[in-house]
Length: 287
Image (cartoon, rainbow, N blue to C red; front, side, top):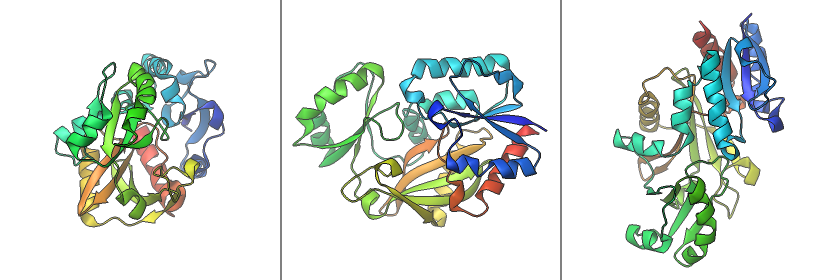
């Protein structure tokens, strides 16, 4: 029986509830799952038949250590899913520029490089944005992310400075559709579309994460949206075990917010066949 590691964090050493739902479908297919904390130095990664990155949700606070861990996985030769080169590429949200250069429809973004300075008010005036969202290019769970405006832009400097010491900064227009229509997350296992969810922020907030009061419900994106999401997934050219395409429909156009290939929540409980589809995709990469 193949034994695979679900790489997780200490705070989630027993896995997320979502990931727990996939343990039995994999066991039924002859695969044993064991949780393994990514920065636990006692873990023998070479002992596993594969490592699947699932919930190391503290990685953005330990950037150098996380990259060193990926190098360790490469050195021991254990198969990793998604592959470590994909993980490194996806770690910094500057990958969105790569997607846009290849024809993907991405939310308009002002990019500020690490170590640079920025006048947020000037950006908003030049772009014609009344309100904007600021966030680091390396982050997770909406950490260090906030909404600003021309009236508040001068107060942003104190929060921006420490971000630009460690990574880049993204400035994007605040999209009212996030509150009115919700953010779509489309789930792909083994490169094949499985299902979708719609995430909505709590009243008066902009963050869709449940940690901030956001809600999640099943969704049925239209054919044009699904086609664009599939095209974005296929841009990488690799056989990805998992991908989550996050975005919002503005007018009639789907605009990508994130292509999650590193450690996304995969929303297994929101479709009756999702856990089984996942298990089949895992078995396929183990062959």
